[in-house]
Length: 218
Length: 218
DNA sequence: CTATCATTGCAACAAGTTGTTGCAATGATA
DNA sequence: TATCATTGCAACAACTTGTTGCAATGATAG
Image 1 (tube, rainbow over the protein chains, first blue to last red):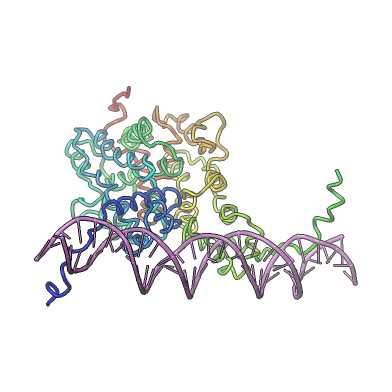
Image 2: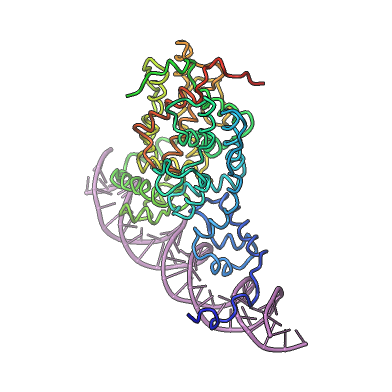
């Protein structure tokens, strides 16, 4: 009702210091890389950012909100993979930004945080941004999450490059899973020649048999 | 020199209570599933095990040792995958115990713990047990870890089932990575039909083209 | 120039956690 | 029955956690 006039101007007062925010979020990413999600200490974040801890506590009420804010923007590069004209090229274009993310320490921290048992909806949703623009009606079986884009699969199908029965989501998840294993378990660089060979593997398969040899499944 | 006789009998005194040990380790696994590796509290473990915290502190000096002890035995089922006669069957036999592990809450906790940034050599080595009995001289590029067994690949090569240029380690890691993604990110069951389709994918590839179509790489 | 007022830093706080230590009770084995 | 490692208990200083009251700051409106 009188919400507009009585509680005073909303734009008055000292504006929020962009310096403070940036320093805190940078510190969160660094601390996350050092200590993981469960090991994140607000005190340490504040100390690292050279900011008083009250400024952190007042602005971000929960740890999850703090981490989510710090990770905003890290996943911005996951636009639709370009049409490269071949399935192999599309797969590479799809996997590349993920590998780039997993090659950064901050990207690794984000992935780890998303894996944490304590991670609730905020972070899970953030991590799921990868799949935001997926076509509706397809594969919403993964809970509240959106499936990853599958435009590349339809292009491949139109070109006759797509093997019948392959689930594009599973293909994407396999690529992502392999990259995660490489970056988080092996702790090695998931880019370059390694990525090329991964794309070759999921594109061509491990078997030397021609596709016609594939036995039907019940 | 006089080490045998002077410092008294080693077998005297009250023996360690197997009950206590079992209760503590069970509690560790449960706490790990609830709070993750960095969030593990010795106090909480002791309370959950209904044991005094001093008993825990005295027996396991570090958190890492405690977790490693709790995880001992979880990876016992990773013997050589049996020779099923086909590459597809071998791949399935290889992936199945991993999927079984990832389907248990405790297995998920173990995988998460191994992914933790704070995880040092103990746990990394424990998690690497998967690959212990690998043939020497092959692919020790992953640091101090042993590569996974590749006997299945040699069998497939002998049968003419193996596509040239495919790295068996990468194949195993891709299977494992996909299962981890399924269990830890999607938080879905990595067994059953899903696993069948995964094995199909890496066995056959996503492309409908015959292997001969595969362009040579520089 | 002045008043406003959200933001920031600072100091103190109770409540809880951490890892350690001294001491007494326990109980399997020799 | 004597031994003695193990276990439980209580207390501990040092540290962490999240909150609160108060004063200083400084961009903006008037």
